[in-house]
Length: 416
Image 1: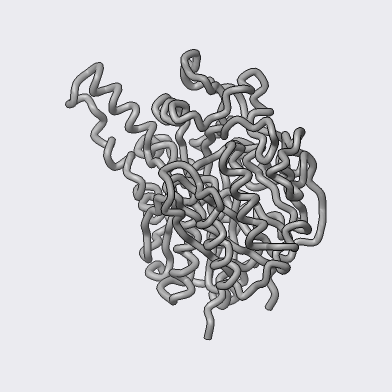
Image 2: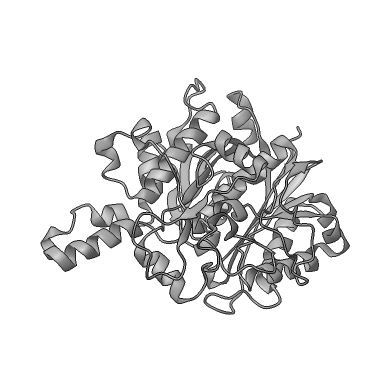
């Protein structure tokens, strides 16, 4: 008998909200979370804007002493996981979750780069023996899921996925296969990133991928599919799902938010940072996800696009969507919530998967904000500037990363 996989919980911390309710309200209102960088001096940086998490009271969720042991990417994932765990009804569950059938897979692109930055500073100014003793345990990418597993006594599969900007989606896809293949019954999964540091921002600036023309109007800087786009906005955040096997969820009386039915993955095998000019890998991964879901192009109503606001991604992704969906591409709603949040790198796929589920739950198409001057090469319906209600049966969520990584997820309305 085929094992079906459903979503039962969501949690997030990101530039537009410190929980699911705040985040969804901001999406409905088209409220941007992008602002001027204020964590370090950006005078020498061409790009001076970011998507930062704001007013987060960490001690409300994590003991102060414990939080000192975590890099920020772990903190964001932990807080999001606590919300997802609670929303899934697991905090009060009497069904006796088997810890050996409970796992954690979290994606991130960079790991603890803030911790690494602090270690470099200590090395330079104070010497090697003044580097913090927890530098390595705080920095390594797998420590996020490791700490989450400890917190929730999840003794099943536990690891990190590192595939740049598709890390969050690939983590969810991996967790999906773990449940489908009867290795676990319930998984905490998604993505996280905390890259707002001098090193990360400087590195992206030197390869000219960040927006630099809207430093005085930060909320205008992320403008996917718009002709005046000039790069993405670096952001931090996490998006976490609880996914589980259908009968397991039913047995404990969980509320089912959506069904996860497809996952496609591929590599462009083309260039370190640029997508294949014909969108080859994205086409392959989108078609794979549709095939796995046993769905036709016409079954998808909305695509939460990768939509980075870069010169190369947006027309290439548009071209790939048109190749896969044919005539139906004209009827699809396609939008990028990065217009509000910026690009959370490894956290993006997790957050956007959460948005996809919320779109189904609320029957609402999220907008692509700052879509003021249409690009002739980007000629789909991007839900410009204002979201609205409409029938959403199934959603595709696209994540495309440096290195040519492509991770595609499909969620649909749950029906028995």
